Amino acid sequence: MIAPLHSTPFDDGFIWGVASSSFQIEGAVSADGRTRSIWDDFTRTPGVVKGGDHGDVACDSYNRYEDDIDLIAQLGANAYRFSVSWPRVIPGGVGAVNDAGLAYYERVVDSLLERNIEPWVTLYHWDLPSELEAKGGWMNREIVSWFADYARAVVERLSDRVSHWFTLNEPQIFLGHGYVLGEHAPGKKLARKDWLLAAHHALMAHGRGVQIIREHAKKPPVIGWAPVGSVTCPRSDDPDEIELARTQTFAIGDGGPVNNTWYADPVILGHYPEDGLRLYGDDAPTTHVGDMELMRQPIDFYGVNIYSGDLLRRPEDNGHAPPRWTERGYPRTMFDWPVRPEALYWGPKFLQERYGLPVYVTENGLASMDWVHADGQVHDSARIDFISRYLGELRRAQADGVDVRGYFHWSILDNFEWAEGYRMRFGLIYVDFETLERVPKDSYRWYRKIIETSGACLPASPVPVR
Image (cartoon, rainbow, N blue to C red):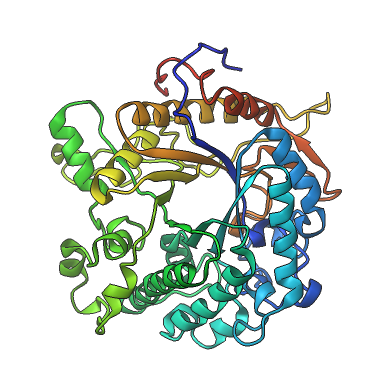
């Protein structure tokens, strides 16, 4: 464990949070009127999820939410980011609102507020109702109005207590893995023209969701979203390298679905990036009157999920270095992602400079080799070291003037990790998926100390990874 070095703490008011999502922790997939989602369907396809795992029970947080919120309170977190399940709120995706589903989220919100934990609610974290996918899902332009009706149902019910809202979580991933690679629900492999159209509709749904929140919120809302942050890190502090890293961070790259600007430029700046339009050519979506104006709704913060980063590819690499190039033997997580702490410096810095919004790191963490040791505890020293390094870089960004206002650790619980099933453990709390027992890990207690000191017990300066 890293010893306290009495470093400069984060600014007053910094948000210390943890995160989860509905399908990954709730279980109870048929309880109280909930209908099926695309992930319920996808997990029934043989061979697509490791171990044949599914979310029928997951962490059973639907029934154990009080215990889980107690653990969040004992951690000292002042914010909890969680998502609402669309098929739990509107069975079938459209039509009548399910009172029992909304009542569950009311209980969650009330339990958080009773413990002085601020709820940060995500409207869409990938569990699209199956019936909407049968109508085309994100390929159908009607999804903009479907999402608006769903958002209104949630906002009208919860906004007397909830102030902080996210529209979409990681459109790059639910589109890229679900509609391009076929590795996530709904398991499609669309042509480029088609997935670009799906992305266009997702961005419109985001904008319409922002409008709905502002129109119907009972408390003044604070609204953002949570895309993936694709970050290129310079190899040195040379200004030319930094500028090249910035350029690569905001480039469309190989034209795949994972990048920053194809999604963020319309949302913040009101237009698609020129390099993307040149690259996609006739595959770029036809823009109807009002589309871009709908996407560009004022938001209050830029949430970003950053786990790793690419290392700058210099011109002299002559294109031989692939996007994830790194030194041989370089440290990687169980997900095979390079451990790149400086991504939490350069990512927020580049994004805030380009888009001019306060930044919250809405997901960060690692999949590690965790198990209950012979002494009954989970000793996850790698996670402690990982978070320490990443938070050190985030604090450096704040000290250098980046308007970064909060950090949400992914995740509070080990959970259903999508196509990886239950074999990837991201949690501060270990979950025995047979007994559903919760065991706080060493990192849980360490993160509690970080929160108590607002980061003053982090190392005084970043420690290089090697």
